[in-house]
Length: 600
Image (tube, rainbow, N blue to C red; front, side, top):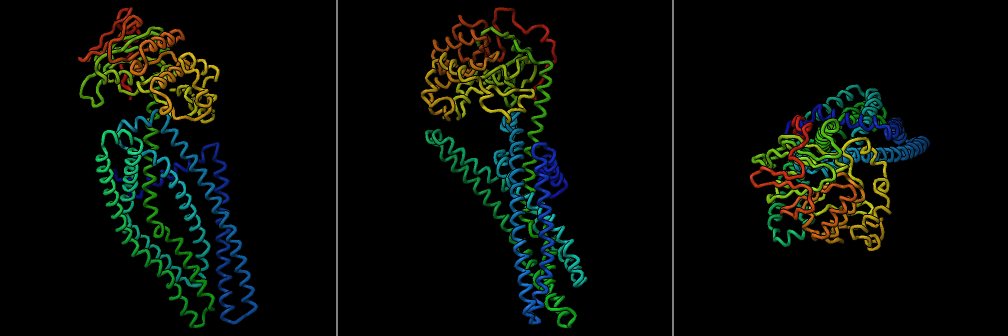
């Protein structure tokens, strides 16, 4: 772990300031944030003014008791009640405004972080390119909630502390300059000792958040894969793993408890002493007849308020250590997402200028390696698939087929060579087991997410109806593939269903084919469609795609009947592919001359 995430330093405060600036700069919510903030400042000023007034009311109230002044007693008692009533009204209004601002900030921040995480395939890169950012789901939910509420709470405490110092310094100085000096010295010494004793909590709380999230992830995995675990009798693996994770988080939490114990010895004694210190200095003055009795009470109130303002680090250090860890976790997610997003945007812009061809998928001297980079899966692949040409890609090695399938989609790195293809909204990829998220039937026909351009920024403003083909067109495509009764069977186009559960694998594949027909991409890559569709049905689908102007590229683990295909690409075990098409093998000469590119 880097040192920067384990300490309270300038980077921590810089991250907080940048997050605050971001929401203030947003035109949609920035003005509302300023209005809420202005209301909070107004309430804080009112509360501090009433607290000062209350200290004098209390002083005169106690003096009236000491002098047996009945009329003065009842008058100041009524003033006490009136001030308390106003304080109650303003304090509740302050809490309401603070919570409203916190909710606004949490909603804004969660949405913006999630868009970075979900767009530009950041979620895919975080899952497959390392474990620098673990448990992003917790960072987007629990960490954002904790950060926004705690930041507002600290901001209020700091603002209120500053106003309290201004309000009560004069009060305490007027009673005893020496007592004012003692308050400053006492708070300074206490703050220094608290930081020294509690500093390990920053690192420990960071580790605790990760370990708690890892333990929850194991429980979620066991629940989500209950059938597979039960059939494979792999419960022992998860019992061992969960036990190990539980032991780790327990040991870490025990260390947190020990540090809190040592810190508690000091902070508890520190807070108890606050109650007696004012009396030690002011009571002798009363005994000597130099001040009235009510001054003792007022000095205690002023000293307590002033020490509370000076001692924020002491009283909040345990929470502050967790807060620092959360800032680092959110900042790391945002930085990583922005880095991946920027990298893909730059790559997409370059591709838009040089590597896009709506009517061709071409490979020029492409070399693909295994994920570990220890062996070549495909060497020197040169092939050109023009629109309208039906192609079969086959070979016995699944990894090589998967590598080419995913490399075309931008999910597998290209070691050498050039890939030319349409933008991803014009080329669809259908896996052997189709991906069908729970949702309405209409949502299953959602248009492909745009790879580049301004449309992706407008997505939050659009409704599902605006992102899907018309219902009539969807129904027509369902009828063509043999699923015409699907809307009637499942309650129409707006009923939410878990399609993985209610449809057979063949029906799922046909539903995805209907989506392909409805969205009419230029190309569609199909990974082993014959595993779920009978040969005659698959042939009918391929012919239908061709008639609709959609070019199918079929990946298979075996040589399919060659009569229907215009060209075949054989991925041989030695890594040397063989391209057999109606034209001379190879990509067009103009594309061969392009500089080789290595996708990020």
